[in-house]
Image (cartoon, rainbow over all chains, first blue to last red; front, side, top):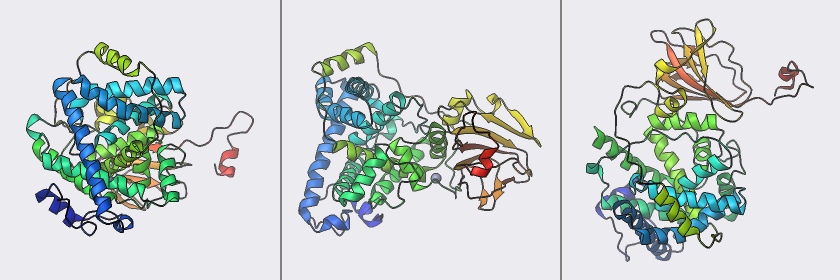
Length: 225
Length: 221
Ligand SMILES: [Zn+2]
């Protein structure tokens, strides 16, 4: 794990890394993928653009109850949520039902989505995970106390874009992990490892995204004062 | 918000626990103590949310499963039947002792806890969590050692008010002590203020009537 503070500061003033910018050294991309040079960074940027588009979809649902935006989100995420639930032990019927409920929850809670702290895939993952705990493990899911944000604390576009890019870089890093390590992480998320079996060092560059989320939390705390 | 962010927290959750919380694979009692610490600690909250991002990335790369033919229409019907979206709860900075995840189980703040005496002035209240792991609130009078503190699995203790000291150091509000079964520990509440904490333990294996409970200490289970 590493945390690249310089890079984060750069991002505050330079929200959009120009396509020609040198990749690697300051990009927050893990050493393993730097060898691929700007190709990896550009892929991350393309995907970040996709991630930001999903943010727009959620905003359209929140502000305009936009069913067309919902249909596109549904087409992308519902089949993934269903596969996730099947892999976690649900049969097809239960997974279908829960996937629909997860997508309905996304609509109902669109106003609670904070794009300065999570990508839409991350948010959908947390809803699907909670549904899984409830439906498959029959447990309640205690969640941390909300940090509600008022209209004046609407996140800034720069912060949103930077977080979405960080999320994509994390996803790229995950894809470029050695197979063995990636499988271990997947097993941890699909409930095949106990917490004591989870390795302390995951090899994931969580530092950048963690710092980004902390910044967002700090701002939120200040806005609430 | 329960209280202003506590920057004096020195004992945090481990990466393993944060990842398992994010993955959603912990027993409910452990989810409760993690959620309670996250309510008080931005550092761990940011780390937990970064583990959520790992889950999001895994979901994005997940192979897809085919949805039923009328799936979208059924979901839209479900949404219309659900009525208007939930309004966000207003921000209410309060003066609670218990973070909201615990209040949800207690049905209120500290004054709503139904305590039971367990000796030497120590009181406890079991919280109704599902599963085998147990969660209880402890009220330890200032200057008192926690009696009968043997446990057989992992035990986490989160301080909510006051402080205690143990072989691992001093634990104040927001701090979590992580003790596995190898650690012999005798927490002592500090002088001055009664100590209130949340303690969760992995349940020991339960034996059927065939094996006497007395055998457990010898088997070290
Ligand atoms: Zn912490």
